[in-house]
Structure formats: structure tokens, C-alpha cells
Image (tube, rainbow, N blue to C red; front, side, top):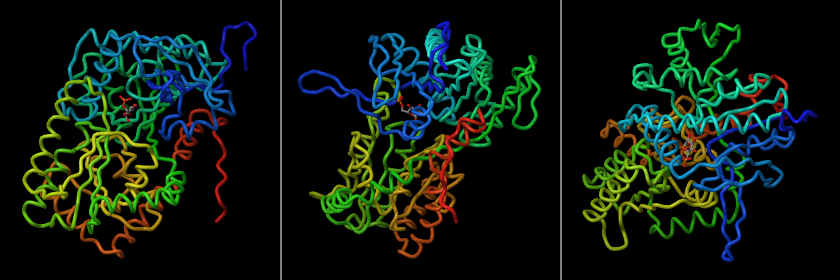
Length: 479
Ligand code: G6P
């Protein structure tokens, strides 16, 4: 509904995320085009966006560049500008140097800097103002993730007519940790601007409700917060998922099947391929995983002719100190192990610091006999679900950390505590040794869970709770 007075915008559905769902592609002649980024979120929200004339507001990834709104494959994209110092203070600083480690069990020490906070407020306000301009009267606005926790309240102040949802993709910490934050009350009040606050797990929603009661002093009951002005905010869990059918289809593609065979061949046709795929992040438990595999090899429990470990680490947040240090540490760890026990043409670990297209990931998943996903803390972990979606052959084993949100659903994985190196070694060994029957028993149950709870389901669950008439009706096959 466009407003003839020009007071409102025309988008009935607005997504706000730190990043736009596109990557810039620069052609050899210097001209630029955009390619939809591989994430599942955009795939899930595309149908609603198209139906409702939606808009996606986000940063396009480069500093100091102002771009006008543009349309990409029928989707309206609204770029938000960040200056170089805002990239340093809002994105690398407060988002990834304060909130990220604080919300992930303080695995790395969070840094608290007042100027980072100021930049976080400024940038959140910019996103809120942009949304206030593009949203139609009574629109649905869905704010994503920890970089934008102040947007709900800022937007509500500008546009009390819109319905606001917020979803946190990462963990929400226990009250004892959250309270370290000098701006804890501001963040809670920012989130309370939403009508519905979504988390990955029930425990996170519970942490939030408890904090609101203790720190802000509002009345709460179960999933509801009662504000003094009569408004009710709900907080619930919506475990995110993937485009499961899309992954399976990709894994069935003959080109992907051929590539999987080629990968196996290049690795010297080992009996077992163990695979890890992660963003290079200190939350992912890479160190512990490499140590566990290394010890299995050096102690002789696994022979290097029998099993190889492929670790893909996607470059991430490379200017943040803790990420730089982690990269050096992993380089050293892998180098030492390969140096100690590798033979010519046979390193026990093949380590790749690179990002690959989805098809290559699917080929790797198909080639992998054992997938190791061992974060020290993770909101959900979609790699675990992607692996399962690709194993339509009911083969392969998943070793999964108890501290990944996905462990709540993927109970038939080999669940491990990544801090317990011996326990992890045993689970990896069990997974390496599992016969086809045991693999199928576990994988069938995992697949049922992943294939029946995909990202469309997730988006529909959230949106139908936020605004009952918005969701797309799923056509489920009749049973
Ligand atoms: C996590 C966060 C996302 C973020 C992604 C990549 O999944 O939940 O919000 O976009 O990591 O990190 P980056 O800093 O590159 O956006």
C-alpha cells in the first residue's frame, strides 16, 4: 500500500540485515554486476518478498561507497553506506570484537570501547531510518541478527504503525555473561521494540526473558513481556534450517557426483575421508579438532593410509586481531602435524584457506565419510544440516558438538564435548569405523529431521507468529 502523501514507502515486507544478499562481481573490463549470495535466508524470503513487493536493506560490503537502491532479479535492494571508521568501529569493533565473543561464551575476551558503542548506535539508527522510509503503512519488518539489536526500538519510535520481528542467528548468552556489557540495558530495550523476538533455542529465549525481568524490571510470564504501555512482546525459539531439497538436488547432480569421485581420487583413494568446513572463527573448535585427529594418527589408532582429513576454512573478518591470530595458530598446527607424520604426497591434513561455490561444497559433502562439526559454541550450525541433506544415499557419519544449536535436533549424530579431546578422539574413531548399517541407521533419522524442517518452514513459522496473514502456505504432500 503506497501512501499518496509520500509519508510512507511502498514495501509491505522489509528485511533488514547487516549484509545485502548479493555479492559484487567485477568483470575483467571493470564493470560490476551482482550475484545472489549463497545463503539460505534469501532463498526462503524471496517468495514473500516478491509477493509483497518487499525490500531488503543492508550493507553492500565495501567502505565509503554510497549506492542507490537497485533491483536485482526482481528483488528491491536498499544499500546502507558505512564509512571506513564505521566498518572498524561498528562492524569489526562492537559487532565482532564485543558482541560476537560475549555471545559465544567469551571464548575470546570481548573488548568494551565506548567509541565502538557510539558507532553501533549511529549505524543502527541509519538502518532504522532507511527502513522507516521504505516500509509501507502497516508493513512487516524483519530485523536480522546481533549487528542490529537497537533497530527494533529505533524503528518503532519512527514508525509505530509497522509490525516488527527480530531474529538472533547466534546464541544469546546466559545472564551472568550478558551482564558484563556496559550497555546491557540499551540492548534489551532495543530488542523490546520488536513484537516478536526469535532465538535459535528455548534456552536463549529464556535467558532474554529473565534478563528483561531482572534488568529492565518488566513483568514477564512464560514467553511474554508486558510493557508499561500495554504492549506485549513475545520471545520464542525458531531453530533455523537450510534449503534441504535444494542441497539434495545439487548433491544428485551428475557433475557434483563426478566431482566427488575426482576429489576422492586426488586424495589417493583413502578408505575414509574426514571433512570439516567452517568459517575460520575461534568459535568453531578447529584447534581441538585438529589436535584430536592428529593424536589418532600419531598414536597409531588411525593409519595415514586409511584416513585423511580435509579442512576447509573460509576466510572471515580478517582485519580483526583474534581472527588473524587464529589463522597463524591453525597454520602452525597443521604444518607441524603434516611435517611430523606426512609422507611424500600424503599429508594427513589437507588444509584449504578459501571459499568455494556451493557445488564444490556439495561434492565435498558427498565425498566425506565422516563430517566433523565441533564448535565450542554455535547458534545453530548449518554445515551439519547441509551435510545431512546431501547424504541421500544414507551413508556417512556426523560428529557434532553438543554446543552447536543443531545438536538439539540432530540427536543421532555422534555428539561430543569439543573440550574433551579424548572423548572427541573416541567419537571420531567410532565414526570412522562405523559400518554401512550403523551409518544408515543414524543417517536415516538425521535426514528425516532435516528434510522435514527446512528454511521455508522456519520463515513461515516465524512470520505466521509475527503477523498471521503473511506466511506462504506450504503445499505439503498428503500422507
Ligand atoms: C554469522 C552471523 C551472520 C554473519 C555471518 C558471516 O553467521 O550470524 O550475521 O553475516 O556469520 O559473517 P560476516 O561478518 O562476514 O557477515
